[in-house]
Length: 385
Image 1 (cartoon, helix red, strand yellow):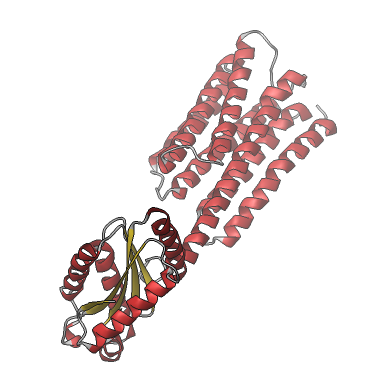
Image 2 (tube, helix red, strand yellow):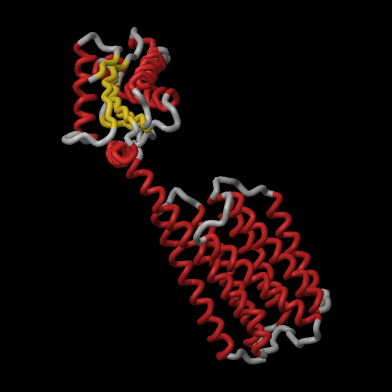
């Protein structure tokens, strides 16, 4: 039977839409080379696009059996790679046995085709398989996020469109409609090809948007966190100080500000090296974060200096917390070569309500003055201004 250039042209036009999303996925992979998620999604998109192109060959006049087997096999492979990509997106590997399950399904569907099983049976079996695969993918998305967020709706919605398309086809076959492969009626084209392709386009658009959103979130985190200690950085502290200052002005609640400095830190670098100095910074950062309360804001202000905001904290409470911080750092394990414990000095200042001429910056300067006084008075202590 001669090939129908009209049917093939329509197929290429629709597959081109999906390949456009494939280009976006490849672009994300190029920007995030360490993340294999986008690579797996891009591969699955390419494989599924090939499967839909095969399915269009029904309407172009090619032999039914090899076309069905090729389309079904590519579809199963594409679905497995899609799920593997989604699992990797949330940091989970895909068990090897899942390949055997998907491979077994592909082999079983091929056997039904070669044995010329009734069309209704083949359509129902394939619809059930596709439904299970997209259901699994949706489960992995919800499991990873805990709820359905933003672009996830497109992923779930696209999967539902695909599944509904295949189940609609199976239902129409059972109802007596002639939907044999190669029958170019509008209904057959719609449920066999156009609706599933539309669902895939929606699904991959959701994946692209989800990957883009996560990339932006990571960039925001990198911009607000200190790379070495993983504490909020100076920029984040300034934002938090502005926020807490405004809250204190509105409510009149007390606000304590602490500046913390590691004593003789240059000596640590000179004695045991900069790598060990970095480890000391990380250990001190962890001790400060673990000792402070969940309502406190602990940040690396710069170098060996840390800044802490304590909302709704009175002076006596802040003094108790300051002593706990001194003890927490003094008991940290240190490199034997250093020959002494690591200590910190603290400077505290207090703020409550709006006072003319008083801002969080002036409170910070007072904490800095108190810190300088603690250094002059022998270090490993706290002072209040």
